[in-house]
Image 1 (cartoon, rainbow, N blue to C red):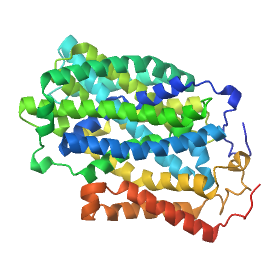
Image 2 (cartoon, helix red, strand yellow):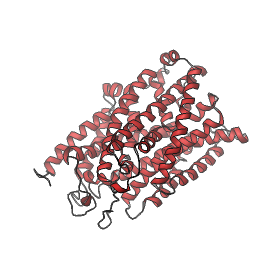
Image 3 (cartoon, rainbow, N blue to C red):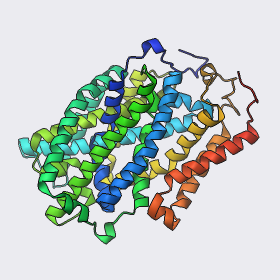
Image 4 (cartoon, rainbow, N blue to C red):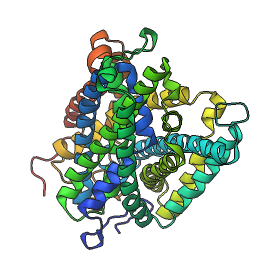
Length: 457
């Protein structure tokens, strides 16, 4: 533990690192092999199968390269992501990205909880004939489902990172079996030719650019949790290669199943409705039964174990006196309340889309600043002691690097402007272009206002 005053950070020493390569792979495949990924795949169905697959490969590759880079930072330093971001945003300035991280992981927990609670409402319908969510009287089943999931989440984070590790080890086996089963059922329902030739109605069609930004918002969410886990791994390959392979495998497989299943339902029913892309609705319509719904509940736990640990780490960075375990309990309770928002809005899809828009705007430039500061400006070296110091090189101006915050705000503005450029909106999306521009601008401004010595010890 390195500490000074109230800015202490927790550093995991090499002798205390207990996550193997398999644990790291299981953690990240479990993070993406879940309800939210399935739902995003269903939303991308509006692009058409081939375009959606291209979007999945391109966006995921770029996003998870960033995950590997942040993963290496955690492995090399032993510090969590929001502690490391002090190097670019400043010791106090890191509170801003920490708050963003806190809100987005609470949001993702709520998304997965809501989808899993929908499955609980289907289970209650099958077991005790309660109406499913979406039908008159169905809200009570959903609310009970939210309560059940929240209790399960509290249990899953009860002893901190160790309990998360155990959940992932169990969950990965059941998730793989379930997705194999789902794959067989989908392709027994419709042919590959039918999937390839299906097109969404014109008014619901999504361009490749919009798909890139939608999936980037989903994928980049994991990047700011990367070091929270890789600081517990013993090998460099476990910190870089395993997060990439695990996250990419889980994303591609589950997004593809959500994509194919949504299209298959559209073909067999004659109607495409992105509101019905959630796995509970699809599993019910494909006749997968109670076991499938139980596995959907489990996948929510595996994903939310990662979400809650990242949110708890962010809360601890903002309020260093709060230890990780009570921070995990606090964010779990807050996430339970946030899960009720779609009930107030009246549409889960509308709430989900608004959430993705928020993430897409704020995460890209934040991650770009963090990466170029560590790899380009500081050449893969942060002084861990000074990350906790009010007198060191990362204190900047009263603890805040205003250049980093300026670039972050500028990145949000550029993102919104790029969304109105026809070719970008249609083909490439704005996210990764925005990240590249902000990285260049940040390095240029830092050379002017905070030049580093020619030689560093």
